[in-house]
Length: 191
Image (cartoon, rainbow, N blue to C red; front, side, top):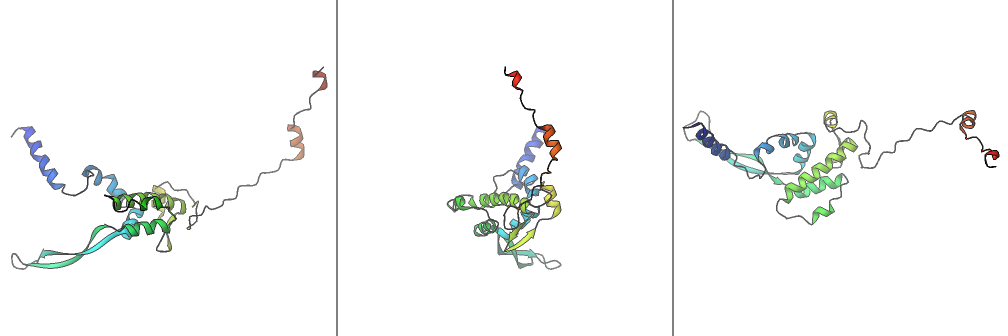
């Protein structure tokens, strides 16, 4: 086999290994984007919006006869619960009305989950946490640091801006104010 033939033979094996339904190439799916979904917010959104179903599968019995199997039932992820995505967004004050009319369109569940996650990230940075099931869940300090969040929250858990009083201006002594005042114009210059 020539050197070029080995590369050509390896390519179909890689393509066969990538049997997922995603249109996103494995270069992107398994890299930065997958890692970003594993942060605090990604795990939170995933745990609240992923549909779980029971699935039976056969497994070989260890130490048993060859070909002996048993059936086990396990929970597996089975899509996105769009209603849960909307609930989580609305709990945190997001206006999602413009997305309602897109329900049922091809790929909507994934798009809305991604969009709401991005909007929740901004809210979590402002509030230093999110409201989940009616309770405020604070964001971990390392997540806030990684996302360049402000040192102190700028909004309360309800999403209302926190009023920060501005420092009072120091009053100038009367002598300084007079010294800086412009001198009166001379009438002689007019004549």
